[in-house]
Length: 81
Image 1 (spheres, rainbow, N blue to C red):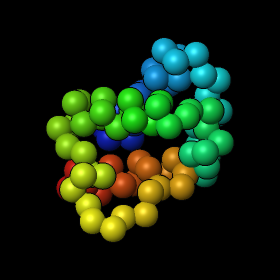
Image 2: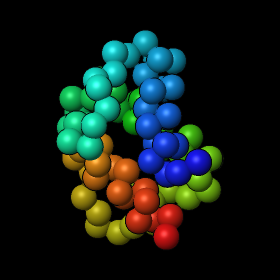
Image 3: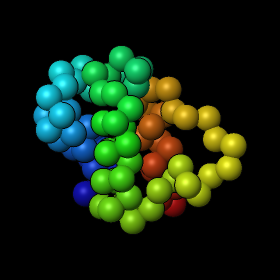
């Protein structure tokens, strides 16, 4: 499974489990407008760490949090290299 697929799957799964209406997923989707709240994002990050084996947020110093879905996916893809 690709990193992109893992991220998108977790967004969909967490939204469904938390009863959130997820906006259509596209690279330019602003994360704050995705329909997920901070708890949802925390769940997504923890689950991605479990499935991918790494957490790019804990490994990076002084990072800017990704603003849109494309940046979020790229952040994970870059950390996987």
